[in-house]
Length: 292
Image 1 (cartoon, rainbow, N blue to C red):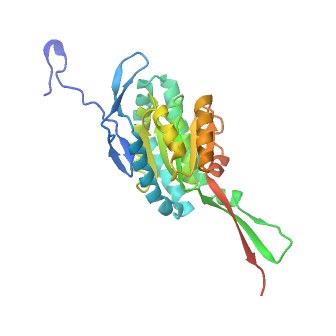
Image 2: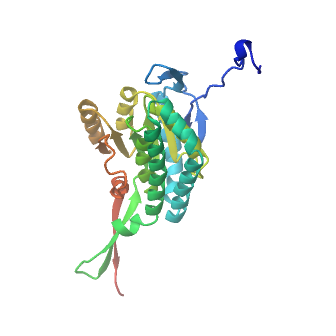
Image 3: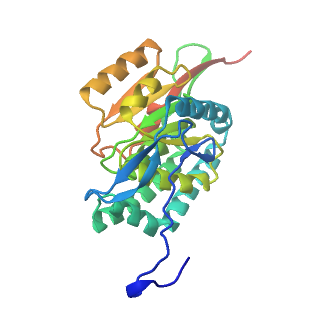
């Protein structure tokens, strides 16, 4: 139904956005059927986002593991092109993201700045994708008849819990260095930030990333962080903005299954830092004999 109703008001119903998760290249609802209400700071209802379950996380791990070898073997140059393509797509939808960020509480100026910084950050890590290997790898001097090479290899599947302070930028600042290093990622967004995350999923799904390289969940930290820390097919866990209790529990759980754990402050420091790539890669050393 469309047109004008009484008093000149439109009698057309608004088509509300359905925020679904991105798992294995598909937009899906939670297998549990649960959802969370998202409200603006003033209390205005913005919509529902899915509430991911432990089963949703396990499905995301399966998708990420399936994509891991293919993404690890993708050439660094192509990884750079795909990250740059994501920046292009985000640039094309900048006005939409500014509106989304304003709807969840950011001022117009802050929303504009955050979108611009997120785009620039994707370009930054696109530039590093085919260069960090030369920076972090090396030919090591040894006093023996061997060449000694140190090279980087991706760890595999990384779980990342994004902060809420900067809804879009916290997400991009975590994802970009992880995938630039050749890993696949499962990201958890919480609270109002989940709205920006699910919008970003539409950008990433059309940015040439192979299915399963980036998986986006939304839900509750207390329900999923423990599962991320204990899952045996996840190679590293990064949490942003964790309190002391969550950080201690995650560190202990990761130690029990030899998983790397990186807690990060929710202050935005180090967004442009190639050493974030180094966090989720392994250094492998090879010895090769010289001469006959």
